[in-house]
Image (cartoon, rainbow, N blue to C red; front, side, top):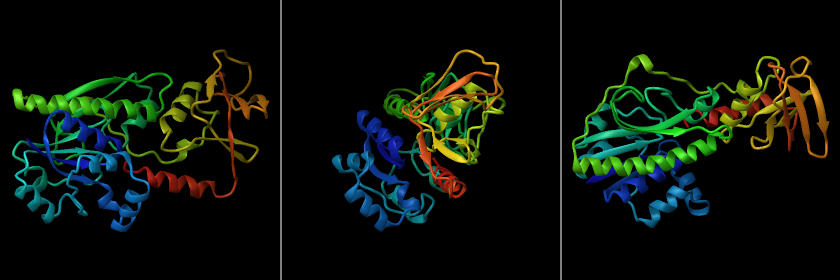
Length: 316
């Protein structure tokens, strides 16, 4: 089976590994870097600080596709000339047109890191934790005109643990994606797969966050909401505590909810420890959270910094 893989980062790397595990012939890899970065920038990064997926591509001597769009005529002609059976997409911002996704003999499929139809959109890792879900997942679905809306071919549930940040959830999800891709490709060779249309009544979509979530607000957020915000935003964005017009960066692995209520108003500070760089603050539900290993962030330029950081993650 001739396969072309489109994507970025850890998801791309694990889709490639899943296809290799299944014995598929990968005839091309199109990294999303080429869509939004200059070739000079990519060459510099690939030479001096190669990412895991770049190392993987070089190790297996896979042909790279270096174009600016998956909707270009050049890409479409290439897919036809390669006589591609399947295009697999993972982490790709560009909306792929029917002229492209209808080219493969079998299909073009997308690997989405949620249990579709829930959590369509750009960053399900963050959103599932932010909304307090017990489970996330990974879904392989047919590509159509709408993002994340095509019929489901394969799906796997992934638990979300109380200590998970988006980093841990993402790491587990991409590993599961590798196994699911292998299973999917083997199934294509051995049996007929029946696409299942998504139930639109159960569909949810969440856009990118605004950046306001980075500033923790103890007067309106309860302890669980504070915890979920910190864990959801890591590693994409830091979260901040404001104290006397100074900003402190929260360590996402070094805070804990104190499981008792106190008779003090929200945002009250009940303990400080400079040696541990620690502060304990009362949340909206009157439960305190102890934050350790806080880092000081300069007062000036925070709003500009937040805007820049949010711009960076808009397409994750």
